[in-house]
Picture (cartoon, rainbow, N blue to C red):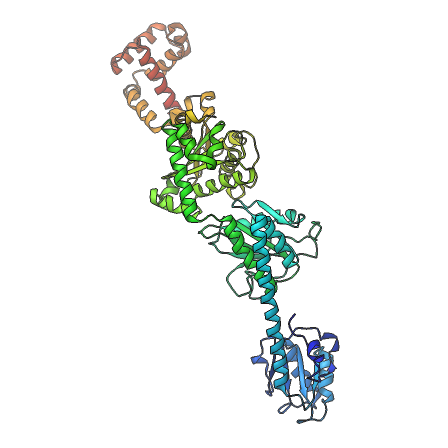
Length: 593
């Protein structure tokens, strides 16, 4: 504990006597300073014990003393020491009355006690307190390190909560709570997901304070006057995890990671601002949790190279070699049905970020905030929570994900795509359970933002069908892009209609070229060949039925069909010609012409 006025009064060598403000002696003293200025306030920082002999003060005038003491209290001075036997044999009554009125502790300093002795006592007490804090900090660091080695992140959180007399929680890249200590803190930590998301939007390392009272000049909660931000979205809770109330706790959030984008976050909740020893413990926990949650660049790059090799072997039809290379890292993924997910940023998003193969690789390595990187984080976080194996490979401007069918990874990726379509990507991926591609159908109905993501999902496949699964995912991706959808599942394509596919620009160009001569003929007012052709094809060449639909004689319709053949230079007896003409008419209808 830092020195207080009470500890100075109890110091046997100083012989100090309390003359006023006895009820406020427990206030900490930051320093002891002697000043004979009539107005020392401009030189005060707050927390000082001011020592005077009243050389230049009108200490016998009540009005002057009231103004003097009032200014000292306003400046944060915690006590006033008056030396007797120098200019005054006793503490003047006007000064005692003013101190009593303002509640300022007034200490009588005997002549035989020099001010220097008081300053030394305060300095020694502060040094001793700092030494105790550093010693306690080192002890906390040893305990946290021991727990990290023996119990992992959960052990670190438990030890940290004990050190700060509060609670702590660890979040993954998606903002979901991975672990908390004590157990009741999990519900409290879950309320801060939005604050964690805001923290992750800032460049790492970053910190913020939510709830409780934020100390002036310490908004980032790191003990200095750094540039953190204080959020106000989180309410407090009692230690039993009850409802928000007046006993709101102060929560510090710290990002964990060495890249541009944090891969985890730490929350520390306490009843008051952290002291020096607690600050050492928090900093040690940050370092240890970073080591346990952040894989080194070289290890991550090595895993990426293995993942690329496994994927290439699968696509080359060499599943046995792929399984041998995958080993324990991806081996179990290749022993059960899996899904292939292929994602690509929309053209404007790629152009804006300037992502080529090198840029994509750099963004991947740094964990950048691009949409592909965010999808990769969602997949990896879901795999970590569920214990599933997942293969995530950046492929130039695309991302390839290989995940277990009916697993948490596929489900979380589908939820993320659905949230993107609904404009809520910040909340996606925070939950994910086993199941099919649940959410895929809903996601498929969402529209793609011009700066968004398009995703194709293959049907379930096995190791020997990896190339087919990749082709299916690529086909689904192509359809998603053309239809303006966030995500398309390949199994949808077989169950749907081919008509929406005719909206493709290339198909429309073909249709326009094939039918242009007929449209130009009709524009002269010499007959309605396009409508007649449509009616005849829709009736499968039945003259009477088609003529009835048009309201003309069948001979008129026969004449028009001969004109169609003459203009197009094609025979309507050819089934391929009839098919092409019908699709061309459908394509023009989809285009609204």
